[in-house]
Length: 176
Image (cartoon, rainbow, N blue to C red):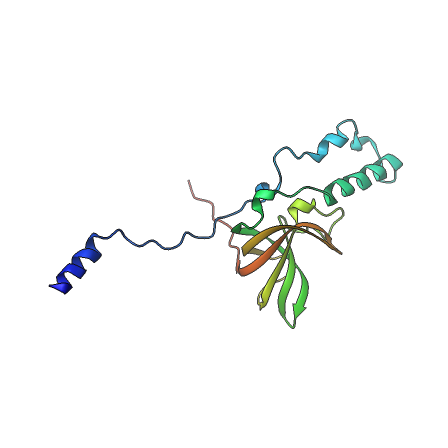
């Protein structure tokens, strides 16, 4: 009789659900609503200037300062999630990586100027990670913190405590 009651209880109980997958965080979510650094340059026509024009140099310096001080989105502080991006290794242990920058597009941070601080994530892992290569796309899973870090490659507006990384596979377009 006990076995029958146990079987009925298991059949009638609501199904157990696995923990939800890591929520995806889009790069746009890292930019606070209303932040628009382009307002500073609305009256400047760069197409009519040479790179050596003092006004162009001044504008680039101003842009770099605005981007280095770009605000982070406070709602992401302490949030767990996954984000796809390109890795720029900063610290290695042998052939494994423990610290890297994550950026939204290929070549970011190795060109001037680097992206805004709210588009650079300083990622750290407690355990060395294999397979993290320069400018390869990855899914990075972990916990976000609003925390600035200045590196040789740019100012990061976020810290990501890494739980795991996985290669990013480009979505295959659906055939019509």
